[in-house]
Image (cartoon, rainbow, N blue to C red; front, side):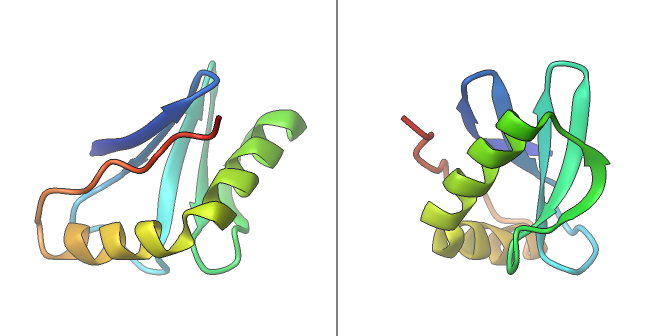
Length: 86
């Protein structure tokens, strides 16, 4: 798993050669979740509402970068860092 962004205590990462649908992993305090890239749906786990809102805002701003990293991860290539939410 490689970290691709970090902001407000939220850590965003992706696994190499992960299963479909395209998604990313989120860790925040004792919470963890899996978020779909295409629709930002919560696929697994849970996050506090405020953290989930920040993650969704960040993901909407960076959807193209997330999809690019998904393709890189499928090919076991180095992932690119994505600008954190400011």
